[in-house]
Length: 106
Image 1 (cartoon, rainbow, N blue to C red):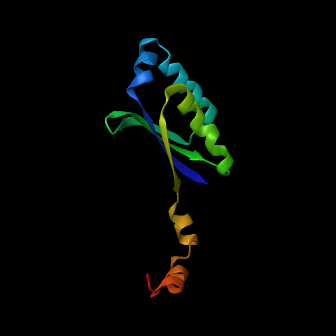
Image 2 (image 1 turned 60 degrees about the horizontal axis):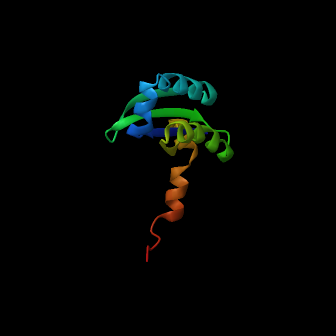
Image 3 (image 1 turned 180 degrees about the vertical axis):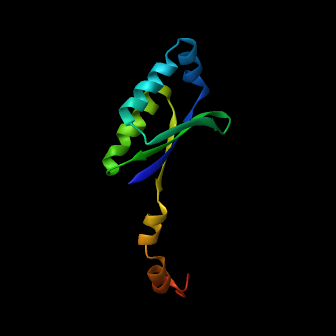
């Protein structure tokens, strides 16, 4: 399944890694290991950040995606399942609506 992974890098240790000339190499090694479908770097909540699209065969793959960011950058990672339009069509929303329509909430 595809997942969106938001990575947020705290100012430290990232600044120190940049000053030491290590940030780029570490990011390259992590990307080579994770092999995301795509990755984009941007600001997130006033900090450096990245958004990746990764293919995750099952939940046991999540640590191999998160740990390199945690251990090397003390980063925060958020994982979200991503559906394509085809995935959403296979969810059979009409059937779910029929099943759950009109059920009291209290």
